[in-house]
Length: 321
Image 1: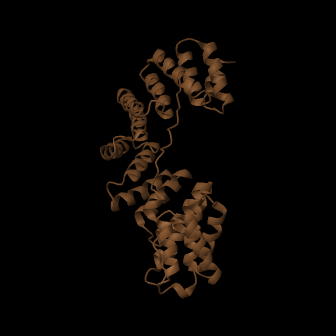
Image 2 (image 1 turned 45 degrees about the vertical axis):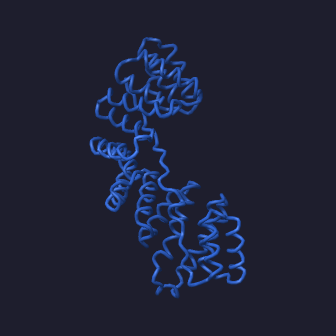
Image 3 (image 1 turned 180 degrees about the vertical axis):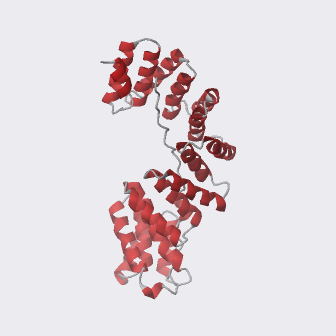
């Protein structure tokens, strides 16, 4: 019986915006420095007032558009942030800036933050292009390569994603988001041994990350090591008993061990917590069919389908017609 379960997405905050706040590039402008200082203190409303004053006085001040755009990004004004960052990119391309000592950072920062914005609003391909430009201008290479890798993974380019995470790790060998994300995409590519090695290192750095435990568990399943998989998944649930990925993959691991009665119980308990998650209904349907309850299994597969599941189509054709 085919059990084709997709891997849960890693829920890593790849970096915090606060770790990459923009340092002002302006040449001695005290008001600009004041605005940038307020922004680094997360006093965005106050900073926005000063950036506006600066732009009223000089509508061509690139640094003010950058700073205001970043503030608007933090305050969830996506439209305003996009307008300002686009303007900053347009202005920074002027030939008069080419001789600046900080030219690369001056250019790269706006592409980087626009990439974050495009990723947040779901414009994945443009996000990739923006992060490629941030990398070109060598803006904070660790963060830029990391975000480019994440963006490439989001458009189903796992090989390229792995390459960029590897570049991060060349610069920062203990970078946890890069380790965990590279491990994830290595597993997607079927390179499970290398994935396990990265997950091991990530767990040495932070043994409290539930997603790393569950994803290493999934990877063990790809190596036919279901006992190890179950142990890792149980660890994720020790950290968070309501963790949906852990609850789902506990049932899957039990099925791989042919402990279908326990799998049935695991899926039933998880459905009580997450009654609209299709993979749980699908998993319980598979468990019921494995135990000979064809009618009950078909009913669960039908519920899974009603919530958007397409994995069970083959089973429905085989058992439920």
